[in-house]
Length: 417
Image (cartoon, rainbow, N blue to C red; front, side, top):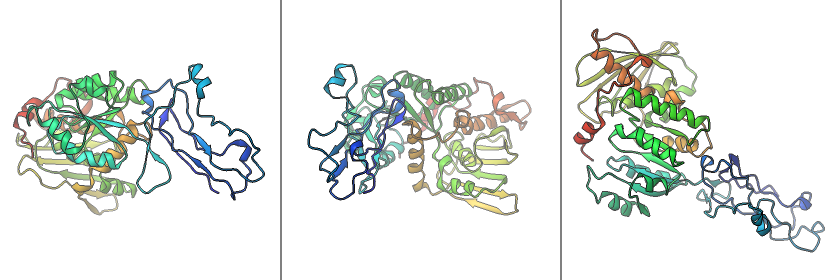
């Protein structure tokens, strides 16, 4: 009989181990052995239990291997501390059960409690079923009520089956493991991330992750601290970075000489999609930018990548809703057209981000890469506003205080769909 494997979440940085029959039955024949392994109980992400001991799943033997099990009490699983263990200070196993993937008797899905902050856009409603499909629980929501009214959060919770409406950010932090920041005012993100991380909550920041160069660098520093284990992790950005079409092209191993990318809409709110698609194709490594036009209604610029490729970006404000598109000129002389399908963007983005935020996978981007798409847009705007418009600007030279678009002003203009 093959091993019955059961994988739980992290506890103390270690993955719950594979359940096995007791040592005395290691050589037992398959016939007559009716052992079964309970799924590992649900645990919270590693950054919330950094000092907790490693736990193993329980193993219960429901039968006897003929000739290999003497009468007497069944052996106790090593992972269960029992009453004596608890008397010595060994903590109880967390009570919330893990969830199995539908129709699967294999690994248990590591479940995180998710809090949604900012419900103005279409993203929260689209994310809820995807988060549940990935095995997570949407436990709390919070909305400032500025665009849709004070009753919107309660209405959203009722429509989407969310048990709790948060009173404030502190209440959200007390009822989730991972917070997803979705509000339209990007200037609030840094303060929210700082507060949530101080409360021990990992954070996914929707695009744009911030609107000033200083805030972007502070968020990159927070992400770097999370990667070093100094507090909960941070990630996020645009779902175009993880577009399946971009990843598939990059996986072919071709070298790009140039990329032309664009869409339509607000220079920052939608422009970051265009620069994120370029990073999805080429990887992290945007180093410099220059403006190629001075029309305030169009984000037009050129970027340099560390591997030598150039990126042309063009994002007119109107009409909103044109498809995302990139044309890649390769070293072999061809031109590949990449047009990500909007319907398939969110799930892979959430999957890879939550793998990282629950301690089970790498981040979709490094700390600097997290903010490169936004910083590139700001650098184009800085080049356009310079005394010599169109001069090349190193991304690291954009002043911290540079903020061409205010989040509060965008929120005032935003019309929910």
